[in-house]
Amino acid sequence: MRLLARNRRRVWYCLYQGRKPLLDQDGYDTGETAITYSSPVALMANVTAASGDATQEQFGIGIRYDKVLQVAGTDCPVDEHTLLFVDVEPPDEFDPANVTADYAVTRVSKSLNSTSIAVSRVRQDG
Image (cartoon, rainbow, N blue to C red):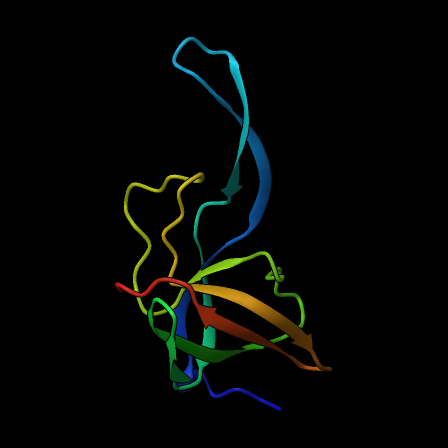
């Protein structure tokens, strides 16, 4: 399947880099770790319209949004640990330990000529 260039739009992804130890104000290890991500990288992809549902839960209404991104080619480095900026721009001051992305990858599927990326919304305020 070929993807039309006019249907592509820019999204940004942050790859999972690992965990780094947290230090206190004196420089000692606290025993806690923080997940870190790479700086945002632009990616051109077809983005489907959001689909989802709202359900009544014990502590309020739960809203779930899902989208699918189609990327031409199979060399896309995105995996199930990646965070994405789809509906919002990445911040100018990027903090790799505090990423405020609006979508997380739930599944990556590669075919002969393209890659499909299923994403779910993780941020409700954007």
